[in-house]
Image 1 (cartoon, rainbow, N blue to C red):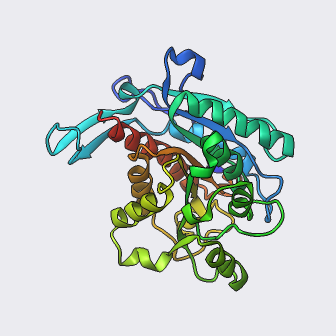
Image 2: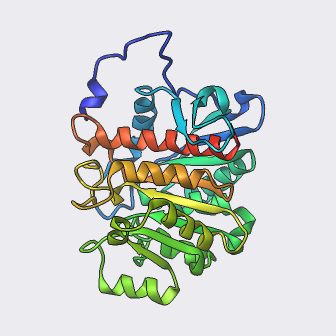
Image 3: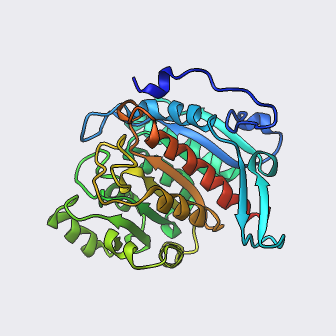
Length: 320
């Protein structure tokens, strides 16, 4: 059990409202603009994990934050600085957790439920769970448009392994019909993959943007390239945020994170930039094991901030 789970109750200040605690979709009263849903995959992980506990931990961590932000240079036309309160600007819903997503039947049901939520939302954010959740999340977001859909991953790993595990979602999506020429993998790291899977990515035609490239290229330029490639088919884009793309100092709760990964601010910035694009209809947050986090809960807190960054990008998309 992490220290976060036994921390004292949060303080109450009516002038500092906390975010999270959003209603179910049916209670929103209209089409939700952002819907979160838990997909607690863990049972097929290549390393021991309690990632199924993470959706609840992310929801708890959200309560540590407000939804207020200052949008510098916001394109909404309100000058160089604009303040937003996301809970006031967006209709946000929480669809709860999906049951048994690690089983074949549960995965199918999860994809169907996410497809339903995507029809009723501008953006669906799926809370993992290990990286196995990317399969039902991406299939649900794509729906019947899988042949035109695209995928962008922020991940240290190619996820092209054989079999069924948290190391195989990209391969499984290609086998399900996703065009690999519309897959972009950002943050692939040295010493975290093998020659065989690098070759597999090359043979499939997947675009790989190595971690080292991000030291020299502007993040917006990288995001624009990824969106151009993933969106070339004209269909929806799903984004997989595998938090183990981050440096281990900021993501100790990710079993496979390594020293030298992305900084927290980089992943947060990329998330907001991607969510601002109307072609991005789904985002998943994967590979965080809340039970293995540092005592200060830094990995889960980062995951919660990624939810808010996605909401901020969506607000920008909608001109709020």
